[in-house]
Length: 428
Ligand code: FES
Ligand SMILES: [Fe+2]
Image (tube, protein in one colour):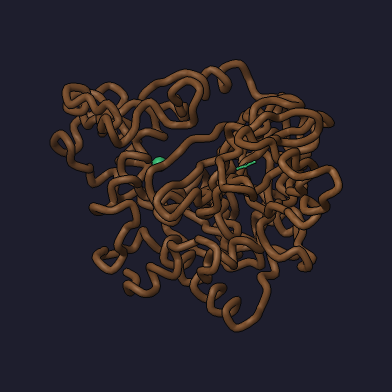
């Protein structure tokens, strides 16, 4: 559990808060390239850590991420005209370029230089692998772009998605560090043909002893970029099978898969304190994604990783307002949750941790499988404390720290720390 004050510190990310200013030291996903697909395509609203922005691609293809509200009388530039290298407010025609400069002010005399004194906030952006990233921090810091491996891969080696969660970023991110939930939340009903725990163990809805005995042993290692979380199970021939998850400051998680298999990266980006943008990339550094994989990502199914959004939006079809279309009949007979798709299953629990969109961690009772969550919170709290005392985050200044993978691998069970044994697989 956390104190009320610690919970506030970790969950509030608007400008001027400690975590908000800390997060602004890091490049963050801001929108997908597909949202502003072509020069002079319509501008889109972007809300990032509570800041109301507008993104547009100008006639030269350059991306602007600027204040959403016109410097004149605060009209939403979403209604603006994206034309001739600038976004023109439809109220009185003031026009802004991608750097936020006012480049035309038709309501003033041509002799006036008023427009030279008008500028909207604008933030630097970089576009990689279908994501537009933004840096909202101080301009004089030598921050570096995080060099995630998927940014270097050919187009057919990754698949990208974005969706909204109606809750604070922290509980969303914690969901991916909580590997104990997988065998329950994402499983099938006991007794159903697909029950991975086998038939006849326990009554419906209970967890068999057989399953409990396969609970992993966890170990956590701190790094300069965050944490490596190892979950150990018995492998073949007395080996240890380690599934290694990465948590990378401040909002990234990577879930381990076997060498050669498709890997998973998520970013849990605060839209505001009560909403989170999830950016997800499935990527394979060894080969293009298969037709079957793409089908899995594109098509809804109970155990599928699919995120089905309402067309034209990034709001999931199965969301809090419709109880994720839970099917109580199927919950009795087939699926543990009765909710279709692992992402919707995750959303159903993440968005409903208590009555408010920000989980109140003073009320929780953590157990032994919550070790990774505890360590992540502790590390983030310590980082925020150091930051308050004037230390800039090292990870923000060293982009190559992000050249890592999350991997599942069999290692000799000889006492060598998992992060040593798996080193050659973990580093890109
Ligand atoms: S409010 Fe935008 S030009 Fe007047
Ligand atoms: Fe999950």
